[in-house]
Image (cartoon, rainbow, N blue to C red):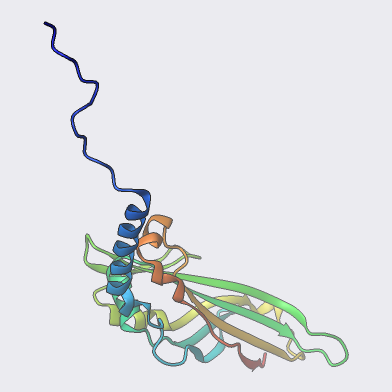
Length: 207
């Protein structure tokens, strides 16, 4: 007698229902957020501002000297050590002051600096994006100090300035971590907090 055949299959491992999988994923993300919560703190400890600035004439060219207060927090330091790049921009605007008409713009410049840790050399690389020049620094303290202090940056030819006119110079600083690749941004979601813009620092330029 032929044995009866059963159409039933061996017990297969059941997949968790979609709801259970979603709950599990939420738990994983929540754990990651709690672990990273200290890094969500403000990127700056204190006031971010241009503390001083001036233009000095040398060899027929005006050079910018500026000092920026950049009191970075532990969150920024940790981010830099993990390879998150920091970009600082200096916006310079020079205008001729007119009495009855709006001021006329003489020059406008954006100077960009890029700071990032190189894990291979264990050095912090500070690059001037406008000129391509870069410096290698041994510590984050030295890198931040160098970034905060801009010296003898050529910005304006003397021929554009008239001796009997009055001019105003304005400079502001911006820091940004927005250049993080999307793949890193997913893991380092707190970098969105690391964006600041200072007030304008204004002074009179006497030719």
